[in-house]
Picture (cartoon, one colour):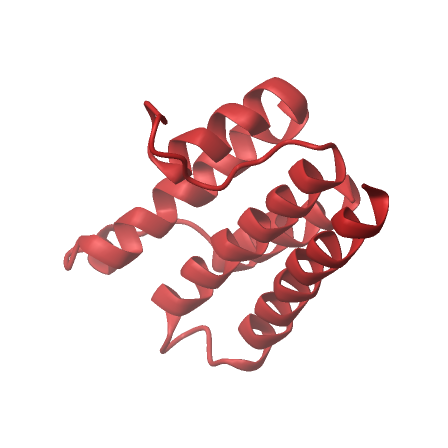
Amino acid sequence: MVAAILPRTLAYKDQAIHNYDCLLTIDKSIYIDWVIIMSFYTALHYVSAHAIQNGVNLQPQRSDRYSPHRKRSRYVRKYINSKFTDYERLFQECNSARYDPMYFSRFKGNVNDLISIANDFKTII
């Protein structure tokens, strides 16, 4: 079983690193939405790696009552509670950046804080 888990864990970890490296290369003053989105997905992939490493399947199932994001959020709350507030903040900021066209005129945060939060998720692996 460990042999099957390791490649998937590494794939999610590699994707998290890839997302993080990419977000560091883009102009934060122009592409703030992508910085926020990639920050969230960096954390998401670290959480997915953590779940696989611990034998928990977060992949969508027909019988699921929750969306994949809610399922992952519930996992963070239960198993990585110290990161729950950060995960939810990244999730909310990501949703706003993706779907609210007026978001940037109201955004008062510091994208460097979000980048730092995303990078801190690497400590869970």
